[in-house]
Length: 285
Ligand code: G1P
Figure 1: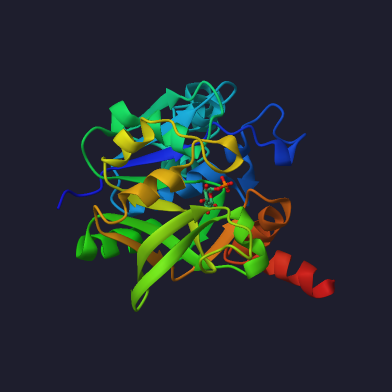
Figure 2 (figure 1 turned 60 degrees about the vertical axis):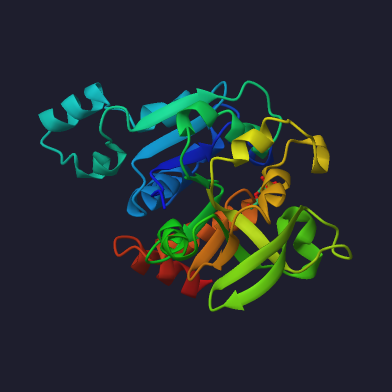
């Protein structure tokens, strides 16, 4: 079984749900406590053993690349003032470890992943959607890699959702269960509650086999007129092992304003430097 060394981060989205905040900055640069969303996803990937980060970007997304570059002026000024460069440590990567490719048009998540096909090549890869902020130890992708090492094939992260929410997610048809692992027998993108095969939704974390790229090559449109990753994953079922892993941790949907505010509170409460004051403020409410 080939190890998962590469991760694709689809980050070309316009972030219209966060306007005007995202007019001039990428939504992935929105900050939870003191880190942009992209940093949480990249940290999670690094912890899971990923060596190569692939950003699928678009126009106006340069801040994402700058974030992981060396900021010479900033560092020179900080050094001159005797300030520690430690907070920048997590933004440092070896040369070449962060690559990017552009998705010129917003044609869907499946299309975004397909744009990375040459950088991914012929090996399994992870996909992380930075909107889904996953908090746990070990991290979500690390838990999935552990499962992948047992079952191989394709692995997605799954989570129960209320039936009235199925139209916001990819939903699986579950097969046999073994602890946190569920066999995936079918997948459908954003079904209406009355048509959903279950209430087990796909969260934005995937480990996929490279064969998905030749299915994405077909550019078939699905739900919402977009090229959906879900449809090509569904086509792999039966040809390769396919499992869902229930994450042992918390998911915050930062693609949504409420989820984003809650994520800030939840993560602030886990941070020794800010938790006491934030907790006191909340208690005062
Ligand atoms: C995407 C996927 C969907 C998945 C969701 C998880 O949808 O298409 O299958 O359940 O991410 O966050 P989006 O949220 O981009 O509409």
